[in-house]
Length: 380
Image (cartoon, rainbow, N blue to C red; front, side, top):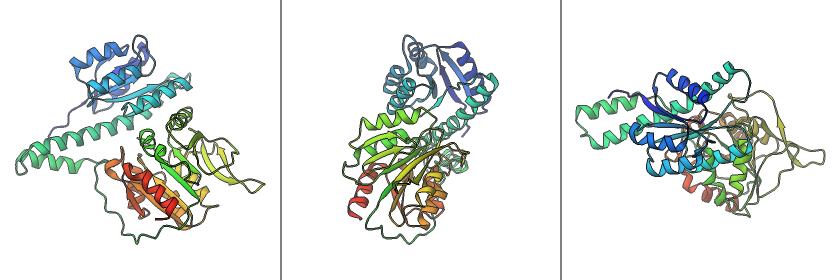
């Protein structure tokens, strides 16, 4: 079964960005740009004839903007993937959060520096893993579709199975977790900590709003995101949730029944004030696991102050950030939940925790709020 190039359409109202994105996409050996458009209206017309696999969609455009476009696109062409290309300001960040809820696969921010070469490099660096991930998932989807319609004993079926085995991706490799003697959860949890990355905004929107107003623990979240976007994510979740959700502030005292999201581009750590109150500190120390904020950094700081009463949840995301943090938490007492493979957009972060033998329980996203509530309120 021959690998086909991923067909990409670029939609942006500026000629220079269309040219930059086209050059970047065409530089990847598994993609080709088949069309461009200067606004959503033109793009929707071209989609009917060009049939792209993936659309890189600008947020703000004249005539038809990105949000309007993705609503129509995902309704009429649900199989086509969309990556939002967003400016870095509060309004565009909020629109991007809405676009993710309408079905965008992911987003990248437009660089704001004045160095053209560096901006080009930053765009390529940010875009490459997302498009590569989408391409891999596209291949897997095609394999499953073809395998279901092929006879199990046919040469085509054997070729498909062989191809599937050869795909190297965190979304396809079957894991064999280390055997654990699952501990009994503590009778009382005092804090809930969450690590999440790719696919996180939509997954959090299906989890956090279902938590009860009397959960009676503080909730700290690290979502891998650039600056500005975490504030929009917090506002987006706050509008849907019974619990109060907001972006972390330096020296803020943590309280029960509050959901606090780490600021994009900065680490979040737990500390203790002179008045013996648990507070948050925001730092600019170097990235960990190429991430800032980093799940490991937050979790390791939590382990210094909470013993035998921490509930950790690792959700969808690329990479392994959070694994070492869970390891440290478990050394001082932690019950560890990981999101199930089939409910993840990317099974990298949960997989890493499971393979390290650190997951006490694997839970589907649809069951996560109910399970977390049961553990915290009932200890069951």
